[in-house]
Image (cartoon, rainbow, N blue to C red; front, side, top):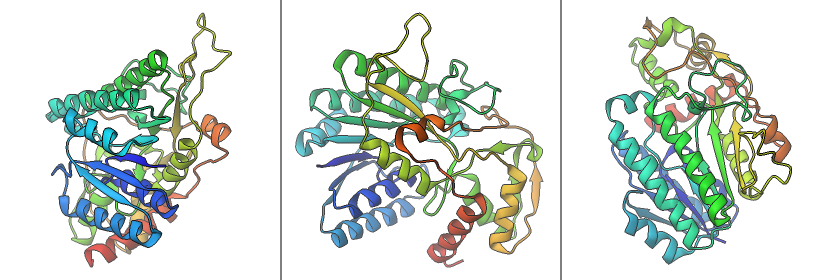
Amino acid sequence: MTVLVTGAAGFIGYHLSRRILKQGTPVVGFDNVNPYYDPFLKRARIAQLEAAASAAGTAFQLIEADLEDREAVEYAFQQHMPQKVVNLAAQAGVRYSIENPAAYIQSNLVGFGHILEGCRHHGVEHLVYASSSSVYGGNTRMPFSEHHSVDHPVSLYAASKKANELMAHTYSHLYGLPATGLRFFTVYGPWGRPDMALFLFTKAMLAGEPIQVFNNGEMVRDFTYVDDIVESLVRLLDKPARAETGFDPFHPDPSTSWAPHRVFNIGNSTPTPLMDYIEAVENALGVNAIKEFLPMQPGDVPATAADTSALEAWTGFKPNTPVKVGVSHFVSWYREFYGA
């Protein structure tokens, strides 16, 4: 079996690819290694994947191209014939979507359409793709559940992820493609993205610089450790979505379908106040943060919380890494990688 992982040089894609390679399964990575954040970090991840493949006696190959490049995507499917596909490539970042919406349309919509076409025409057994907790948008009912409506996004990033769910459902319905969408909740951990809070906090605090604390610190997030994300992904990859025989079209449940399509929350189910998260970073670093309190940013939401009961029922796994443990692992990696 071969698994195609798009975004393999990215944060989650790297961790998932490494886990699959260590199991002895070949991985074809697809990534454009763009400069949205430091390509040096992405190249270092790729080097780690090549080493993991060598150690496991299996194969890792990277196709360096854009999802918007239809010919490159078609080549990946035609040349390697993956049985399973994990689409993690996307233009990330809620705030950046306000500045550069065109990037999200090309990567998250056009690019995802190419992935769907590749799966359709090459007999892929299961497509697993990244959605986001951002799809819950203006919802204030907590915890967020897959049974809730997600019709009120507050950023183009969120809208593009909701569109991905609709596109995948349509392909599941029309072409029988088993597809599973994953609504990630604030992922963090070693090898994380430099544009995310934990990385920014750690870098600034070690330099003695202030950290930006939005909404005056009145934020709550369901911080989810990357190893829990990967464990969920691996289990879901081996258990394709299937049609819900009891689906009631007169009272449609957003979490299921008559088509082989499902969506799952992947979160820690332990919402953490932002100030507690910062305290965990301070403790791990042994440094007190200089805090610059700022108002809420456009496109952001004050709180997220995940109901993961559906994930647990489907896979038998519940993400549970405590924030202080996950933050400590990140800080150890950061110090080693950057010599800080």
